[in-house]
Picture (tube, one colour):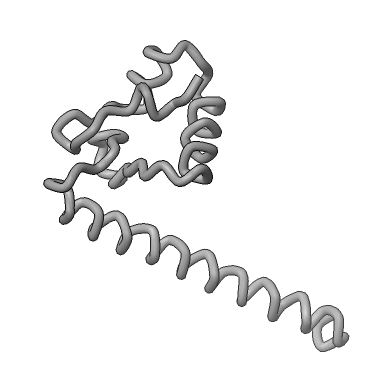
Length: 99
């Protein structure tokens, strides 16, 4: 089963994860993994975290693509910041700077 076959084209046709789970008949966790696997295969699937759901962008969804890129970049930068802070703490522990 290819999850992208269940994810519509165009933001106006976005599908919620709840509806996607019902449609494909898999548990939520497996649907999320299938979406990640499709993205790893190069399928562009957007979810703008606005409650509208998942969709594959069309040419008319350029602004959605821009918003998605900004959203994901901000998320990545936040993760990197937390990782840097954690790494610094680990280095302090390793050096004995903090006991």
